[in-house]
Length: 157
Image (cartoon, rainbow, N blue to C red; front, top):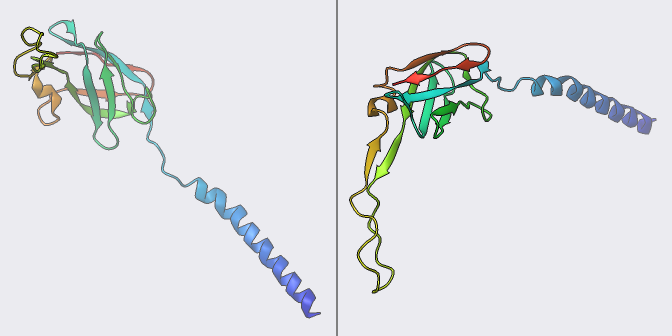
């Protein structure tokens, strides 16, 4: 009799554990962090009427995660927040654009005593392809509004 009571108690305990997980697991799995609403954003960056050839653009919302894009050689960009090309969080954003290149390659040493002269030359320096003020949030005057649906937002600097 005692054996049968122990078996019944174990079976009841197993049923309780299974029911607990059957009820709680879906609730726990569904309570993860939710991503904010986002929308696709692309556009063109120009400076003095010409496409900006390379650089980075960032949309920083008032609250939430920033979206970043690489500016291609044709001045075009596509923003990414979570997954490649997914866009930016809906709402108002402060925008920064940074585009630079290095001028004056470092001097290379001759490869042998028969090499004449030096290759390259000059002290490397940064040349800003767009004004530096647009690269910092505190000095950039650029803003954008991302709305539901596809957004094409161009910047003519």
